[in-house]
Length: 115
Image (cartoon, rainbow, N blue to C red; front, top):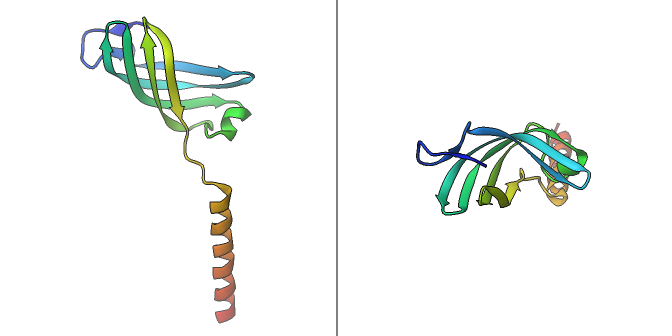
């Protein structure tokens, strides 16, 4: 990875890059837009946003659907990706959805009784 050195904070040149992650048979791809939080010696720390443009079912099930805008951060060492994370959109747990559904049914039943 090469960094633009004209401004601080450092950015990729150009700032937005297509970034693809593959784990087994699953792939997620999109456009990332990041800024450097720190670059010193061999290390670079970056954070920003990731707009997902394509995603296989394995990633969709874990919170990475097409069109999602998620947070991304990563570390580089000597210009190579060392570690990082994509922070998925929060997905309500099934218990919360069940509680909401039963509450709506109860409210509808009470409303029906009053009419």
